[in-house]
Every structure is written in structure tokens, then in C-alpha cells.
Length: 130
Image 1 (cartoon, helix red, strand yellow):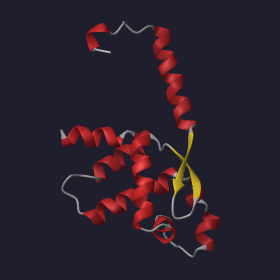
Image 2 (tube, one colour):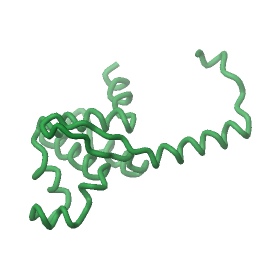
Image 3 (tube, one colour):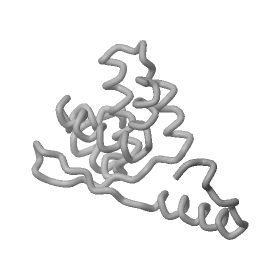
């Protein structure tokens, strides 16, 4: 649909947009992890976390830096990984180390691709490339 052919939004349209955003915040997405043969539930992080992640990823960053940011996104999007009981069980002091301890590079890339789509970063990356 072209921008010229769009109708004028109504008050109700704005309310519905707000309700949809609220529903999206509660949406759980199960992401498959091939190496586990299982799906893990993830949620869309809030806008501040997304903006922080986007700020940290730049076209000039190293692969190691991008991997660290992807691990952070994975941690911030997965309530299971934030469970203090898990941290205790796998002996991690820094909670962000959970992702590094549980997942290898291929897993991080696989999960990261799904999360990038979930938060709309795939569109931003495509726009930057063009």
C-alpha cells in the first residue's frame, strides 16, 4: 500500500495500535536451538533494551563485539536464562555469562537471527546495507 493511498487514522485506530503493542510485549516466541533439538521461549525485550542493543552494534564493531552484544540480547530476551537458580546450577557469577556457558557460537548466531527478526533489527540492517 502506498503512503498516498493510506486512510487517515481515527482515534480508535490509535487505541488499537496501543493494544497491539501491549499484546506484542507479552508474546512468547519459541526459538529452535538445533544443537539441543529443543525450542526455548523468548520474549521481545522492551524498547530501551532494543535501543541499547542497536547502539552497541555498529558497522565498525568487531565480530567479537557483535557476538557479545548478541549474547546480551539473548540473555535479555529469555526469562529462563535470567533464573538465579540456573546461574547457581552452572556456576556463573556474572549473569551475562550464562549465554556463553550454555550456547556455542553457532547457537548464538541461530538464536540471534531469530531475535533480530523479532525486534525488527533485520529491517534496520537491510536499510543500512541499501
